[in-house]
Image 1 (spheres, helix red, strand yellow):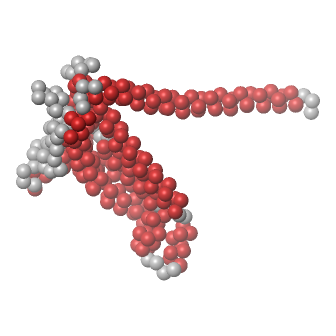
Image 2 (cartoon, one colour):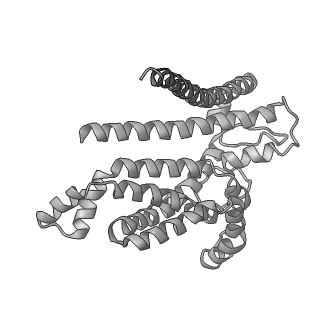
Image 3 (cartoon, rainbow, N blue to C red):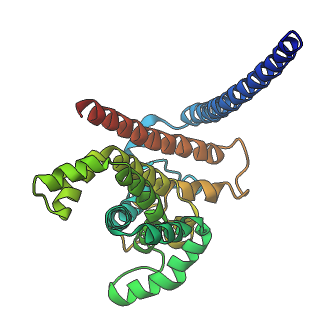
Length: 304
């Protein structure tokens, strides 16, 4: 009894020290992510303010041309925004129905052994390098679309958006399937007891119960499409154009950042600072989407 007590105290001290070290390590990881984000925002803010010392807000928001690298310089952001929104919109139109239907099948219809095989196989698409997707869109998808759609340019937002949609299908299907699979079986059984069919149970009970997870998957997929670089850089072209015609080449915000960041533009120049203001605009877009999705999710959960 007496000899065990000191040993127990030593063991308790060592266990407490280990837990304390783990706590400090976890706190350090959290602070590192916060400081990294703060550093990124600081750099974006400094360079953005320096940009707007030479370019007025009216030039930025009311001009319809974006040509910072030309002799006749224009700084209207809307051609880049329209190209980003167009390609991302096409991607969501492709990914949402296929991803949602795949999730419904895996969660509600597939057997357990089939689910264990198909879900990892579907998620393999997320591991394919985006540059492979880009060249696949350029050399395979675009010629097929040109044979079917008159006036389709060699670089266009349609093929780029379609392949981006294929790329984000696993994100929507996987997260949606997890949300559907988490719905309690008691809700399904209650619907069956009231005489509901399997399809009506899925669409009127299961999907509404999992809407917060589905909305989160869609918003994350949109954010992923908005931030995609290589596919649009290869397949969509690099022509900033204010248009919603998917047959024409466009330039997205990420593509422009890549174009200027290749090293030909001297640091500290107005052209160089333009990539930071585009990055800041891209950050505002994705932050707004994530904020709106969180508010909608919280409102739905509180209503339920």
